[in-house]
Length: 395
Ligand SMILES: *Cc1c(COP(=O)(O)O)cnc(C)c1O
Image 1 (cartoon, rainbow, N blue to C red):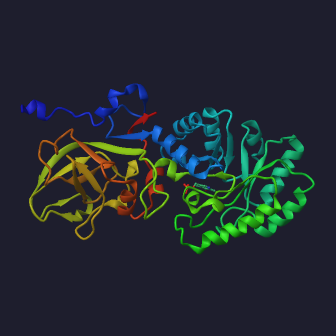
Image 2 (cartoon, rainbow, N blue to C red; image 1 turned 120 degrees about the vertical axis):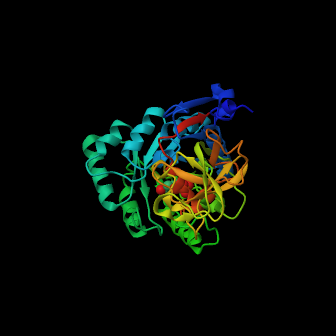
Image 3 (cartoon, rainbow, N blue to C red; image 1 turned 90 degrees about the vertical axis):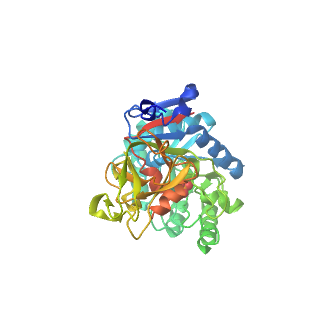
């Protein structure tokens, strides 16, 4: 092999170019970015169909808050809409406006409800607040009365989360009041505290409480389950399910095989490889020391890209993992803002070389593992996926 060839930059996403018709790009060009994030939108749609089938005959919405769990709100919403999804949940009005531009006909619920004085924004973009307190409902009623707006809303009843939602007692008096005038209430919502733990007694407590609340609002569709809730059985499914994280490939049934398809892959390019002598340290604060002569690959991803600094490795504690040349390799030293170091001592030089690919999510490294090694949950890894990556969307 000539020296020239050994240094040729590797296209870390070569397989994407082949079926370029089914892909589109976002962010910086691949050749200029430190890494390429691939988002498989076809898998998101496949996951949604799967969840809809499990929840059948209930309807299946999609939760696209947090910028579509970091995957991109607009591309995710557009793909799911094409797959047949007609109801979306976002966190706030700015996300709702973004969603409205790509799904002009869909029902969009705003989970964080009505900000003071913002009624007209709901009317302007045909959005529905998920009302979470008596004060909010009073303001919504007043807005509807003065504006004549009848676009509907969801009522969130708290059954144990103690976050958003009116109490069960408050729901009783609301129901009495609404008996004379239904107010265009389109959905009754509650949220499970511990759905990912099927053995938790909380689930049944909340199910029973929600059943009582549903009796108060006969004829109004009801929605209780997030991703994991869908797997708790018929009584948790109600009329509409609200999966979020499972759409993006995280396992909604921890401890069992993941029924979802992988969505996200993260691959970087090696900037350089250096030799480290025994006793030398790598990175800020000299927290990792080479115990034998080592080779270390430097990669252009850091905590500014959402790769959490908590996944750093020191002399006493392992951190995150990467795959180089088909082999699992540990991150060494502190993860810095824009860089990390990977121990490639055992990888052949043909793979561990400038321009060579490094996989940080994918090739057997699941989001769950990335999260665990950073001391957090997959949700946080997803929602922090950076915006310096070249993004490749597969449809
Ligand atoms: C975020 C959220 C969901 C989706 O939860 P996942 O665990 O991601 O499926 C559903 N309902 C409400 C009220 C939420 O806040």
